Image 1 (cartoon, rainbow, N blue to C red):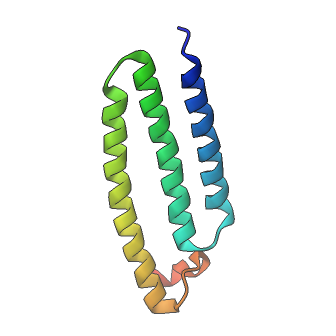
Image 2: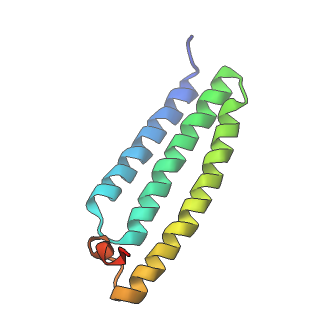
Length: 103
């Protein structure tokens, strides 16, 4: 099946966003930047879901994107709670110090 040219642009945009998110995840030590990188990677996956769903004419990709957005919201809430707890204990948001939260 031959896709429209616009679909390939969305896939290229999604690949670039995912690569930027992966780089940010691997190179940053700030916990907030790590969470932002994860969100960027999830949004890149959502762009792919929506692009291919519209190219194939199915609604499944839109449903998966909505589920992914809901999961991302829950992940952000739990992640920010962990970051606040880490900041209260260590006065920093450095992820290398996160092993102090073990119980």
